[in-house]
Image (cartoon, rainbow, N blue to C red; front, top):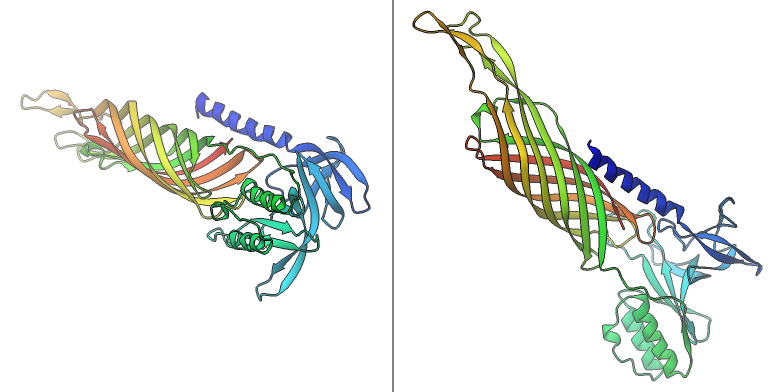
Length: 413
């Protein structure tokens, strides 16, 4: 591993540690007895804030975990959370209640709450499950209306009609904090009541950056017959990538970037000494080596199986690379051969030693999983297959093809 790879690995590790150090923000909790305690609240995206709030009085204090039964509300980063009892249906269709923390988005005659909660105890990574819910507290303050992604327009429309209010462009309302809060504000305005938003609408980052490091097991083949009999040893290659991500939807991303790969393949080729030599018929072993150093650009589509915090996904794409300074080498075996005059000449096995420059085109496919380490940063792990062929500029070798199985780890921010 050269200096470039070590530098990228150091950068990746430093970024993760930096994100972990910033995982607490100033805030306060209000316990069930009304006692307000100021301190620090953990904001890591890996923590399910619907069930537990992790709190400490200062950086040196021990972490305390509070449930909705112990804390009536907490506040940090301009977000207010309140404990409430929420109804759910079990597998038999029976109603049961869970005490959870909900983020309060809108204050007024009708109040809006958001719940981020994983209902499934053991969800399948191939199953698309919902983990974001909205709840509307009615003006009587006695009940909550659940707004799910498959029914929120119907329920809000029915509420507008029963209150003799014009529902307007409800049909185009998206399932987001800002859009649903805007509709509920219109309902409050129609009823002559004021509303107050309790959240700051953040502009979604259109482009995300990523870096990755990978190791690969690979095989390299050529159309030069000298290398056909090589018994190849197991070889490990190294990859480094820099990505830009564009999100097309909650489940589909496109990423493009630049990368560098280093491949080498060594082998052993048996060579039989020909007739006319004292050790004719003897088999000796010649060493062979092919090296590829390549800069490339890659474009891939990523499809996530779920919109949960941890996202398993598949990917497919293509890459285009330029390889310079590559080499293909076959060791020389020299021996003395008797000619017609009884003299001896030095003969060889037609060895090969050439620099091979090439342009390569290939495709990639794989599986991955991404999970957050903070609100803006995340990690990903990928198992990829890449296959490519480059057109060699060497007269003795028309192409070099390679197939790779890669294990990648990366960081997005």
